[in-house]
Amino acid sequence: MKKGMESKVAFIKANPADEENTTKANSVIWWIVSATGWGLVSMILVVWWFNYYFG
Image 1: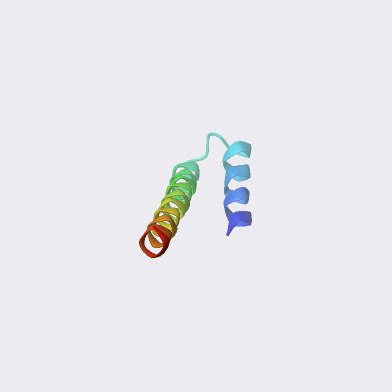
Image 2: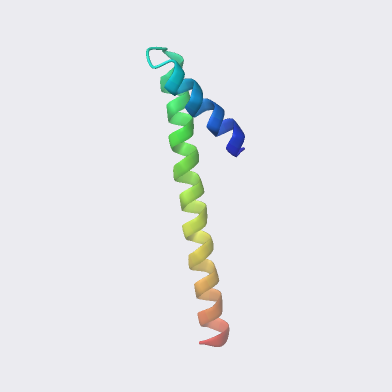
């Protein structure tokens, strides 16, 4: 998945005037947002679990 995003970013950098860049840029942005959200939710759940069972 990461390699696909890297290739999309490389394509955007190589072809700055291409119309397809908007779609690729949006997919890269949403991938970053969703990965960040997934990480935050995971950390919150782990902290909550430790607090619930050991706190």
